[in-house]
Image 1 (tube, rainbow, N blue to C red):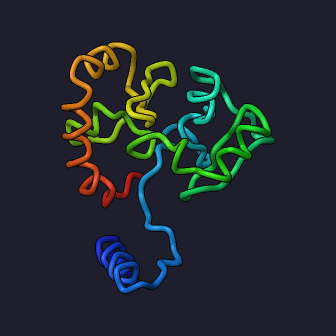
Image 2: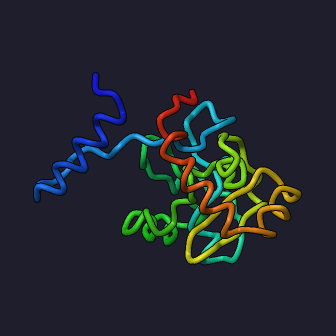
Length: 156
């Protein structure tokens, strides 16, 4: 079995050589609290962009992506995600962006969110969100630096 870092290195090398990386690189997705592997507590990631806030998804509008099941509030949201999942996926696998900036992966509250430069960021709770909004760019830079190390963790 390949170590995750080796797999990512091979994928990068294949792309650099003009080939295609066929398998999706493993990365953690926030399914904390879900025995069924449902991402971000069943909330629709597209709703944050299209509806202006959190909206609980429905199992009948679901997609498997990145090793998790994503729920959507409508068939339209599901279709939008299927066409361009990277546009709608929350940063850091849907874990708390502030926690990621501090070097750990923790749960989120769907109401604690922000969109910065077209990217969805979720937070632990509204208090953490307030802290996050005070220095968002600094926390994003720190989280971006921590994310590669955190991706290698097995959080099951």
